[in-house]
Length: 58
Image (tube, rainbow, N blue to C red; front, side):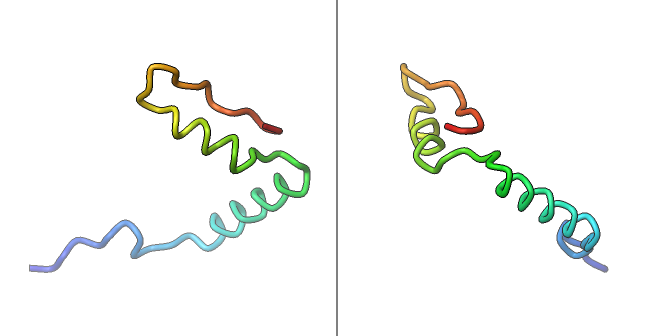
């Protein structure tokens, strides 16, 4: 019986390259969320005071 291929067995190099370029462009343009803002939000999950998701520039 031949095993089914895993989801990562086939890659799309063009899509990967495009996604990396988009991420670099966002970084260079300042379209980022700080680690601290993301950490604060994630740590609030499941608490009575759950914070709204951070926005670009936070």
